[in-house]
Image 1 (cartoon, rainbow, N blue to C red):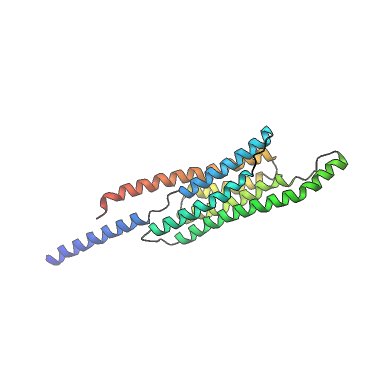
Image 2 (image 1 turned 135 degrees about the horizontal axis):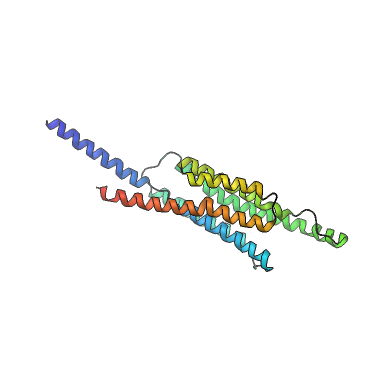
Length: 222
């Protein structure tokens, strides 16, 4: 009888330890997704406003993506230190999003450089023919960005078995194809919509679930 009581106590302790470990491993706060969703949405809508209302900011709005890389790294490091138990694939997911942020910054620099280099040729073509160039490099930039946006979104959603992000990643890829056939203003609207559906909304859902999970597990901590 005494052995049975001991076994029950040990089982209870084991369950309690497992719950506490699970609580420590609840880390998908959604903050990174919310941040990137907000940044890309702002960049797209500001750029759309520049085109629509014929004004220019004194800096390239997409440089905000470089600023966003820093908190992405900080959040990743802080969450890594806070975790007492690591689940399979957590390191991979962290590095995936840091790499994504760096890639966004790099592709922004690359496309800006290409655009600046071909601008004289476009201007010369217009001065000679009196017509706008039939090729506009900037009409295709959104397709490249949306293709890149879909990658970490789909992979993260699949790893976490989180359907909203999986759908968001697919939506980005669909929009990448659509923007091949639409004008720049529609491209920017689709980019903003993609950022909202792929990151901002799923990030908010993740954050809510994260807080609920922490709150539900908190009373069991011993």
